[in-house]
Image (tube, rainbow, N blue to C red; front, top):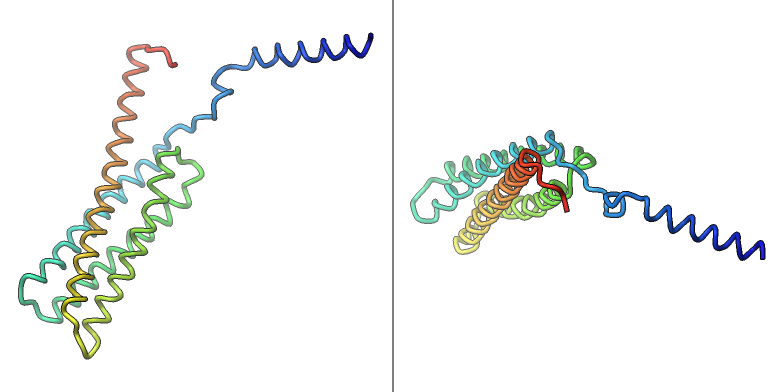
Length: 181
């Protein structure tokens, strides 16, 4: 009889404790956006747009006659842009612990773009510095680099827009005193 009473009392206590837990703790804890990470992402957007501009300019060389020296200078500029964004992405990775889920998503999506661009940029340099120059392959590398740079800049820009819109909605929710779900 004591065991039955103890079990019933224990079950009732656990059930009551479950009812007293605030609903917010039942959901996965929401991590607020980090202002610091948002600023870093905005800076990454600026770097990505510079990279895009330089890669698109380089790709335009497909349609004009440009000296090998000018092409090498443009490729070195792109290499510098990629390295700058890579260093910045390392800073973002270091701040990932304070990032919200959407901020972590953008941080993790930058590196694959950069990896592809490093490969294409290296191939471009090899084509220009090698004795033989296959123009069709070189053209493909330039187009791929421009496409990756354009997609990277657009992706980061979309995440920045998302973060800004999310912030505005949260601000208006507070201002209008709209109860949360």
